[in-house]
Length: 89
Image (cartoon, rainbow, N blue to C red; front, side, top):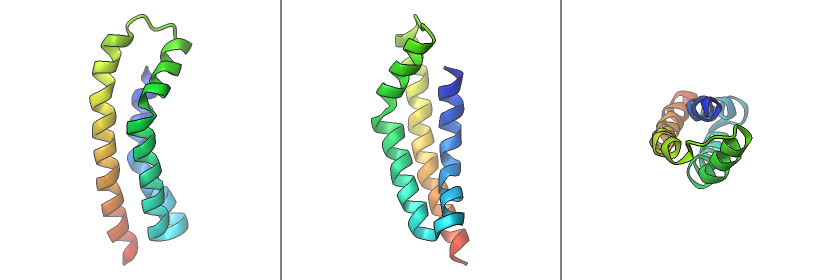
């Protein structure tokens, strides 16, 4: 579960890493990929982590982690916007 929280906090850094390498195109491609992973693959990632850690509190944890991942998706898009304008200069 801690890995899922740490992973969600790392997603806003993805546009900066790809922007440094591939410019504006890399920023938006990586942001799209990160948001798809955050929002669409969350149940699969959560289930894998829950099975791996023998988590018996899955229903409680999903209500705690889902808002964190949604906020991380919003922060990733905001980070991409800031990154886009800072690399544009």
